[in-house]
Length: 236
Image (cartoon, rainbow, N blue to C red):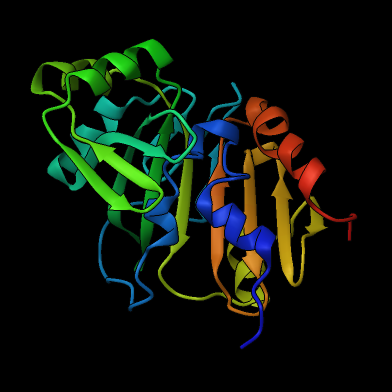
């Protein structure tokens, strides 16, 4: 079996996703089942990403910057899972996810990152009523009922979407348009970059696995481009 690109799997694990904000949460994305995507739903398609005159991105039914976890909660209700996730050697972080986001008949997992203060996270962690071991490297802490309202006030700082279906290069370009820049990663990993929309796409040409990352355009440089400059290959 062909050895998969270490950079691609590191990306799925969170090494390059929205800088440190996404690092503890992408275990959710990396473990997304590869089964068929659900159909139906009235949410925007994953490629419907618009930027207004103020520089705010509108995508996945949310705004960057501007939306909070409470906004996501009002849209998805109990389908929005909110908890603290910590990986080995890293502090816990507040994360939220939609197990099955469906827009325009396309489904996948949507993960919401926040910039929750480290002291608040530590306080919530100490009051957690339940801790679960996810795997050898990750743990999950449920939020105390008294802390949930505070956590839901946190702003959403980034979105990560992993489609349930594999995509080829033609499908990517048809849906998202040609990138402003394209970088080569290790093996056959490609990074498609759209700074004006705060969008970066990691795509593995062998498997067709795709990771869509989105931040406010003003955050694209420090949160997406800076780590990629260090880890990726030359411009294609």
